[in-house]
Amino acid sequence: MKQTLRRELTNIVFLVLIVASAVVIYLLSRAENGGHTQANAPEITANQNTQVTAAQEEPNGTPAPTGAAEATASARGVPEAVFQTHLVTSDVYSAKQKGHEKQYEITYGKKDPITANMTYQLDNGCISSLELTFELPYQPDSKSKTEIDARLREIAEEKTRVLSDAVGNILGDLLPSADAKDALQDSFVRYWAEQVMLLKKAGDDFKDTQGGYRFLAYQRAGDVFPELVCVLYLS
Image (tube, rainbow, N blue to C red; front, side):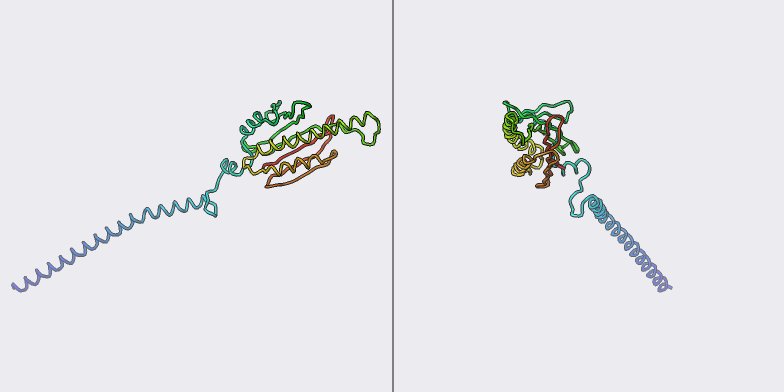
């Protein structure tokens, strides 16, 4: 009888130990799984952040600019306020604003001054184009042999020389001042100024692109005298 009780007690103790071991193993397993879940949580968030960041980037990994930032990054023209400041402080010519806020009268020289009308356009607050209009001297009939016409031709030739200097100096100062990239080389502007003075009659034109800058010049019939128009496109 005693042996039977002893055997049953041993079985019970053994069963209790098995159950206790199972409980301990279960608790340890849950604790380990919980730890892994917490450790992985920041990694998942980091992956999500990486995906969001990648979606906001260009294929090459650089942030994709939008709105005004994109316009500013790609703009070639200076801001309007910077350009206006240069106009009124230039020592090459004097500039006076006319009725329209984007229109100025440019005056070059004091004796027999040359004047030009200038207008500009804006893109996102920066200069996108400039247009200068010069009045050309009256050209008498080259076939006429009268003394009056001969004298008028002399006057026209002198005014053309003065105008040539004025066009070269005004373009040489004004066009680079509108360039925000400082990439409009003096050699480009000198070449353009030389070419526009070779235009002979209304309808003649000159077009050129240098360093991404487009330039157009042409002659047209004005209200009284023929006119020379020079346009720089910065965008």
